[in-house]
Length: 493
Image (cartoon, rainbow, N blue to C red):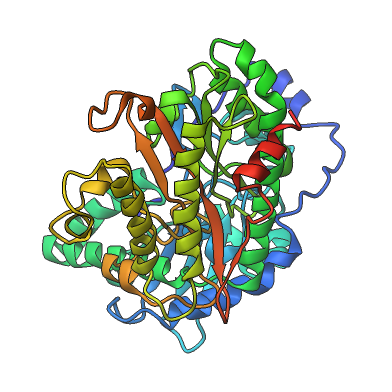
C-alpha cells in the first residue's frame, strides 16, 4: 500500500510505571480547539465541484489524493514552521491551523462524488502519545481540534488519520496524487506503482499526477469574492508593515546590519496581523537593491541610499500580499534617484492603464517594457536603435530589467505556477484575476554601460491588481507610490 510517508517517531519511553500512571490521571476535559473560521466553508465545495468537472485526461473514476504534507525538517529534530500545501488549503479551506499530515481524498468512482478528509484528532490524556511523543504529542505541540469540529467547520466528512491505510492495489491504477505535497511519501508511491503495475503504467500515472497539478493551478486563475477579500486584508496588513519599517529606520541606520532591523520590523507585523510572511522579505539598501532576490538582508542602511523592500503578509487563510516600495532613507529622493524612480512609476502606471478583460496577460509586460526601453534610449544607454531593442531579435534594454512585470497572486506568491506556460502568458484577462505589476530598473554597481552616477541604483514599484468587469482596481493603491506621497510618508519616521 502507498503510505503517508511518516517520519521516524520521536516517542519518548516512560521513565517508570509510576511516572506513566501519574501522566495519565487528574486531567480536566481540555477546551475545544476550533478548526477554522466558519466563513471559509462555502467557497471550497464549489472549488471541489469545479475540479471534478475538469478531470479530462485523468484515469476514469479517478481517486484524487491531496495531502496537506508533513512538517519540513530544518535541522536534526527541528522543523520549519508548518504550512499546509496550497492545493490542500484551496480545496478544504483549512489554512494556518491545519493539522500536519492531513489528507483530502476525492473519489469520483460513484454517481455521488465522495470527499473525505483524514486528520489526526486529539490524543487522549490516557495515551502515551499525549506526553511521550515530542513530534506530535499535545503536551509538546499544543491541542488539536476534534474530528467532529473539523467536519462541522469545513463541511467535509472527516475521519481519523489512523483509518487511512493508503491506496491498495485495486485502487492504485486510478489514484492520482498531488505530487509535490509530501516528497518523501511520493517517492514511496512511485516505487509502489512500479512494483505493482510495472514501469510503463507507473510512468503514465506520473503524467496524470503532473496533469492534476496543472489542472489545480489553472482552476485558481480567477479569484472569488472571498479570495479577493482575503488578499485585500493581506495588503492592508502589509501597508501597516511598511509603516513599521519606516518607523524602524532610525534604529536601522544605527545598526551595522540595518537591513535585519527592517526585515524584523516587517516580520513582527506579519506575525501579529497574519500567519507569517508570504515569502522571504527583501530588505535591500543601496546597491543590494540591484540583486533581484536579495534575502540575506545583512547590510547597512545608510542615509542617502534607496531602500527597496519587497514584502507581503500571509493571512491565516494563507492568502498573501506581494508589495514592493523603494524608499529614500534620508526622507527625500536625490535628483538622480528621482529620475529613475519616476521612470519606473511611469512604466507601472502605463502597464496598469491597459488592464481590462479581453487583453492578453503578456500585453502588460510588453507595455511596461516599452516605457522602460524608451527611458533607456533617452538616457543614451542603448547600443542600438529603440526599434531594434524592442524587436524580437533585440532586447538590449532588458539588461536593466531582466524580470517579468507580472505574476498571478493568491495562496502562493507566484500563484498558478504549474499552469501551462502558453496559457499563463497568452490567456485573456478575466474579471477576478489578481496579479502583480512590478516594473523596475537596476543599474548594477559594476555596470560599465552606464555613467558612474547611475551605478548602484535599484528601483522597483509593485502593486497588486484585480481585474474588474470594466477594467481594474489597484488593491494596494492606499500604499504611497508617487515621489510626493513617498516623501510625505517618510516623514512619519
